[in-house]
Every structure is written in C-alpha cells, then in structure tokens.
Image: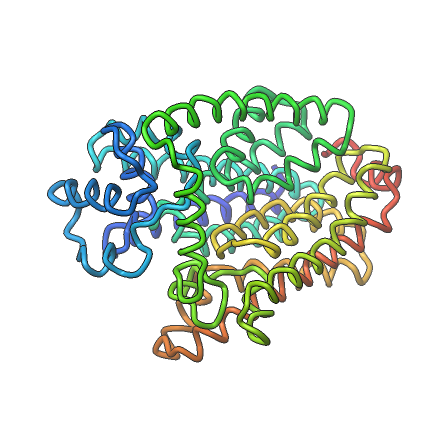
Length: 434
C-alpha cells in the first residue's frame, strides 16, 4: 500500500469511527433520538397486533402503550405536534421492519443502528476503493466529510441510512460483477423501502442493457416478492389502506404540514431540511399546483438527455459511474427528499476521481461542486449555522435555498460530462481499475 493510500485509509477509518460514535451519542442524548425508527417500529407493531398503522389513533395508541419501555421522551412534544402520528411509509417497510418489531425496543434499536452503520460504512469504503486508484487522498477526504456529516442518519433511525448504504453496495456489486445476489437483495430492499431514493439508480441498470438489465429485472422480481405478502398482510388488517395512505400523504404535505416544502412548513426547516426544488419555487407562489409542475419540468428537461444517452451508449464501467453521478443529485429534486437522502452523493466519488486523474479545468469544477454539495447537505454545517444564528426563522427559511441549488448545479455538471464523454475513451482511461 502506497503512502497516499495508507493515509487515505486511516482517514476513512477515522471518519467511520466518528460517524458511528457521534450518531450513537446523539441518538442517546437527544429526545428526538430514533424518532423515525419509532414510527415504522410502531407501525409494524400495529400490524402484528392486528391494528391499522395508517389510522392516526391506532398508531398513536400503540406508541403510548410502549411509553413505559421507551426512553423518557416528552410525548406531547413528539406525538401531539401536527401530523406527527400519521405514517407515510409503504406496506413493504412494515414487512421488512416486522422482525425488529418483535424484539424489545432497546434490542431493536441497537440492531437497527448496527445494521445501518455497517451498511453505510461498507458503502463508503467501496466507493473509496473505486476512487483510490485515481485520487486516493481526495476521494477519502470527500467521503470522510460525508461520514462526519451523517450522524443524524443513526440518531434518527430513518430508513434512509440503510437505503443509501444498500443502494451504493448494489451499484458496486452490479458494476464490478461480484456478490451479485447480495447486490440484487440490497437493491430490492432499497426499492421496497424508499423507491424515490433508489428508483433512478435502478432505472439506470434497466436502461444500460445487457447483463445489467438482467440484474435490474431480477431486482424487480425480488421487490415484487416482498411487495405481494406486504400488501396481502396490510389488506387483511386494514382493507382501506390505499385511501388512508393517500389521505396521510395529503395531510402531511399540505400547507403547514411536516413535509410541506413551502415557506409555511411545519417541518421542512432545520438540520434535516427538505431539499427538493419545490422549496425554492414555492417562494414565488406557495401553491402545489404552481411549484410541483415547475419542479417536474426542470428535472424532466435534464433527465431526457440522460435517458437518451444511456439508451444509445455502449456500456463501460467507467461511463456508468458518470451516469450515476449525474442522476443522483437530480433524483433529489423533483419529489420529497431531505438532507439525509442526499448521502447518495457518495456515488459521485468514482466519477470525481476519474475527472481529477484526467486533469484539466473540469477536475476543479468537479472538486468544488462535489465538496459544496456534501457540505451543504451535511449535518455539521447546518448545526453550526443554526447555532450561530440562534435557529432564527429567517435563517432556517434561508437554509432551504442553497441545498437544492447546489444539487441542481452538481447534476447539470455531471450530466454535461456524461453527455460529452466518449464511452471508449472512458473505458480506456479507467482501464481495469473499475
């Protein structure tokens, strides 16, 4: 191992330790610790006890029944706030979490935290291993920053931590043609829990053709195998769940709701702010009929050339990483996503490393944009900003603007690189390293 790669490895190790320890500590000291995990843990308990998780009173009742085994959490502060006991999760999430819901709370949270941390750290090392042949120190530096800015993934227990890790692992397995079955399971679990996170990554493999299309179809089959029993289970317990889920989503995203992207949002601000384009467009007119179509059109205009390029390009592993680097930032923009979903930016590191190795002005643009996106969607940056501004409403509102803008800029940059890059040249440049 060269000195550069050895230094990079130690930096990665340090970042991983910080991520795990800081996330676990924040989880234990904050009254909001594991609040997201509580939601789908309680939802799965609802189903196990033959109650409807999409019914606000049923879900709230299960949570209150568990109050004696949970940490001392101010119930009124968490579950009596507006929309707090309405779940937007799909039935497949409850099915996958059901084994944890059968366990005592402390053991379930410990195992979920370990699983999330292991998947996320493994994904980080896999992406560094791809970037290391081209830019070992810079690749490890970017991933180090991503790791130390992601402690809220463990603190809140959101499925995003596991989904990001599994999606990245699946991409590595498919493109390296190693541990393929593990990759299929990883991508299927990601699609089952958060299709809006993993969907466009899966779509790339479907469009790329050849063996990757086969992997995508195999993943879809496994996802269906997960979805069918989940839907049968929820339909037996709660026959009206589709309309209830739709009503929950409508309430949560309505003006003033927890997931409302507009200025009147009850939960779009803070460290884990919403990062879709609607947060910006809604400043001009706070109306979903206005800001949603505009956000969709902007992203669609960028995705169409990406789709055409993917369909008409001869596959190469190197080019694949540029395709993923372009689509991951864009995936955050048209629909509801929060900062923790943007940890998928980990998938941009291999493309950045290749650009850095090739030299030229593009490498500096890649460094600055990728670095800015990681920092501005990270936890520590906004913790510092809100600390120094005393978490004022104006600072929280203004904080919603930079993240979507930098994600849009990063997506446009990597799309430009992807569209102009010759597949054969990309393969020659990467050699056998990818």
